Image (cartoon, rainbow, N blue to C red; front, side, top):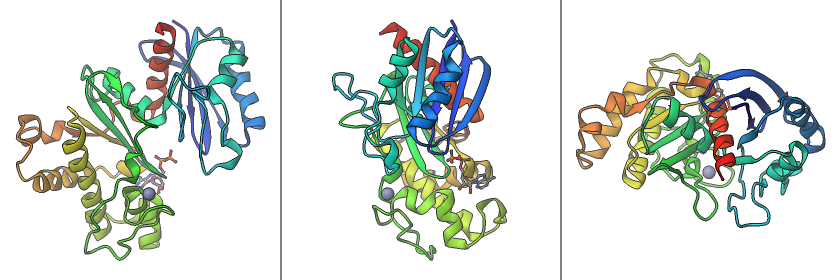
Length: 292
Ligand code: ADP
Ligand code: ZN
């Protein structure tokens, strides 16, 4: 099947052509400007590609209730030009194919669960730790939505006593995950690019502490079979053993399943699809759109 994938991000729109097996044949990237400028780029890319369906993993917040008249629209985003923009409908009208849409992190969770680090698992949570922090969840084989959709990046955390900026930097919340632990928070706190912080800097102990709290909260709340941690900050591979160790310590043996107690190394893992998780997941959203 020839399918399209769109990863709609706040800084760039990545368009790809691929198939239901997650193979990607070609891709192109366009800067995210106003909808009037950006949509023609996207539609132009897909228009003569003869795709059977399109899957979109998008920044949000999004309206994801299929019964709602604004299904697939971007809603209250701080990017004002995109507020209330009917992303799914614009693409469906222009390309005349079924269009599936979900959050960027739900798409990545789906990609990793079907073809990546959670191959074959029906329950998995995916986080991206980058410019923002977001989480997507597949539970019992279904992507989790709810009233709107989860905003796991804004869960409240317990500040680390060693943190010189314990309130974090989120404009909405004091001491939320994103405000404490995204790439920009690391840089604001320490005044140096996260890429340049040495491995033995206390910054990484504190970062691991916050990401371990995130994993503990995720385990007790959603009970996924695996947690996949991606995004630019997770390129610091030394974070993984620290996060695993603190997760075990903070759980205190309470969730007594061998997948956690004995095999934490395969429970909290990096993405297997790397930067392709979102694109592969979006191809699968396209498949789902055809089946609906
Ligand atoms: P985005 O979230 O914008 O889609 P990324 O996931 O690449 O993109 O995240 C970018 C953020 O990740 C930046 O804040 C940057 O500081 C941080 N980052 C990127 N690479 C690294 C790295 N190797 N080590 C630590 N932080 C990094
Ligand atoms: Zn917040």
